[in-house]
Length: 221
Image 1 (cartoon, rainbow, N blue to C red):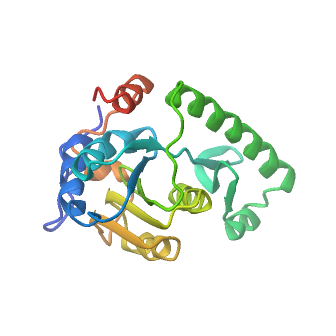
Image 2 (image 1 turned 30 degrees about the vertical axis):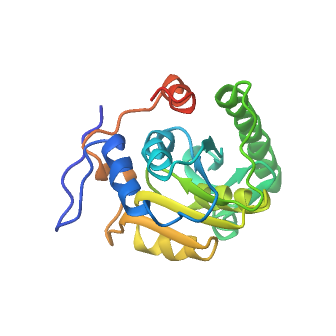
Image 3 (image 1 turned 90 degrees about the horizontal axis):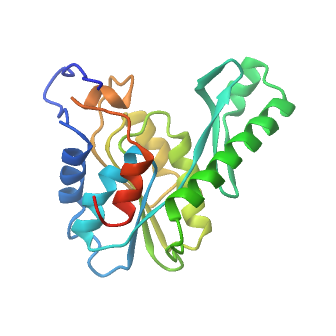
C-alpha cells in the first residue's frame, strides 16, 4: 500500500481511486445530457475511477489501452507512447538520449504485444463500444507527462468520436495545456503547480489488479 503525504495548500488529496471517481463524476454529471457518451478507461487504475463516471453519466464503460515506450535502461522514463494504430514520440528526448530507430521500433513491438494481450484479457468476448459520432470521455486516475493520455485521445478521435474529452482527478497545469490541444475539453479536479507523481495525491494508491479491472468491466465493481 502506498500512502502519500499531504500536498501543500488547500488542494485535495483523495482517499483512494473510488473516492476520486465519485468527485470527478460529480464534476461531469449533467454536462453531456444530449450526447451519446462512451466512457473509455485507461487500465489499470483509470478503470476504478471510470466506474463512477460511467454510472453518473449512465454511459457504457469500455477501455482504451495505450502504453508508454520506455527509455533504454530506464523503462520508467517515457520516450513516447502508443495506442492501437497511434504512435506518439518525444523526439527531443529521443535525440537527447541518443536512442536509435532500431530501439524505438523494438520497444514499439514489445508494447504492441502487451496492448494486444490486455485487450484480449479485458474485453473477453465483449465487442468494443462504437465511438462513431459519440462523445468519448477518456478517464485515468491521474496524468503526469501526458504521453499515454495523448495516445488514447488520438485513438478515440481516430475511431470516429465526434467529441473527445479527457478527465482525471489530478494532473499538472502544464500538462493540461498540452492535452487541451489534443481534445475538445479537459476536466481535472486538481491541477497543482508542484507535481512529481500521481500517487502523491492519494492516501491509498494500491496496485490495481487485472481481476479488479475485469470485475469493473463486467459491471461487478
